[in-house]
Length: 263
Image (cartoon, helix red, strand yellow):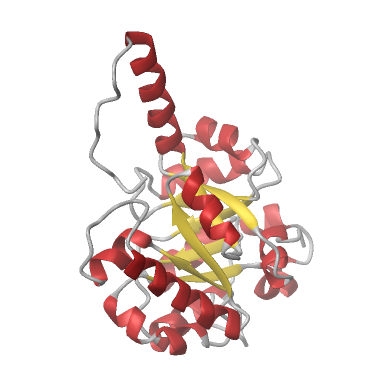
């Protein structure tokens, strides 16, 4: 089976950099994937993307060395199984609140006897190649998002869930859970201390830790703190940021302030 290079890097304590895909376009997915990111994540939760789009985007990503990851809309086993069947090599599950929910996500990612994933990797096996049925349980990453008040309170039991490969922090939702202002990148010291706390629990249990960032500054910040994977912005974010900078430069004006979208 094709190696999951990103997952294996995390298992060895190495760091990776990825990009978020929020636009339903196979060309932009292919173009971003070919830039050299270790992984790209197709966002079915908040991105302007549905399953039909995903079925076109994953083959486009396959034209690169980037590991294809999908954030599902919710912790629904059928959603998780379907994106794995489509060829995802990792699943990010939002709003995981406790061990029972973490276990539900893990079970949906694994074939029996390790889980309850139904067999039918219609495209997954084409991408994964020979040995998929036997090796998928070891090569596909299950990643839980800790970003709610309940998730914070239950961080130890979530992270120690058997079979969980990684934890991904959503900084905006984490800020909401803490009663802090919503920003893409969070400057508050209280927020940083909570992020470090979650990271320390992950390190203790040898679970990969990742976080969403919207800028180079914050991506570098969390890499320096030892995070295993960081998101260096998104397709939409890079497009609008660059266009806004050049438009303002062409006009000789200041950039207009835009409302944060989380991307």
